[in-house]
Length: 22
Image (cartoon, rainbow, N blue to C red; front, top):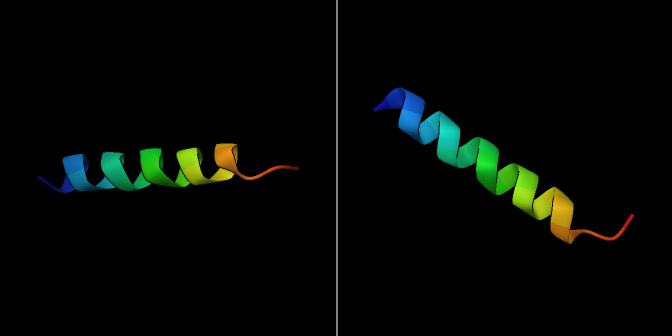
Protein backbone atom coordinates (compact mmCIF):
# COMPACT_ATOMS: atom_id res chain seq x y z
CA UNK A 1 0.00 0.00 0.00
CA UNK A 2 2.80 2.38 0.89
CA UNK A 3 4.55 1.62 -2.38
CA UNK A 4 1.35 2.35 -4.31
CA UNK A 5 0.92 5.70 -2.55
CA UNK A 6 4.56 6.61 -3.10
CA UNK A 7 4.23 5.61 -6.76
CA UNK A 8 1.14 7.79 -7.25
CA UNK A 9 2.77 10.74 -5.49
CA UNK A 10 5.89 10.39 -7.63
CA UNK A 11 3.84 10.19 -10.85
CA UNK A 12 1.75 13.20 -9.84
CA UNK A 13 4.88 15.22 -9.11
CA UNK A 14 6.44 14.30 -12.46
CA UNK A 15 3.20 15.18 -14.29
CA UNK A 16 3.04 18.56 -12.54
CA UNK A 17 6.68 19.26 -13.42
CA UNK A 18 6.08 18.14 -17.02
CA UNK A 19 3.03 20.40 -17.32
CA UNK A 20 5.03 23.36 -16.06
CA UNK A 21 6.77 25.35 -18.84
CA UNK A 22 10.48 25.79 -18.24
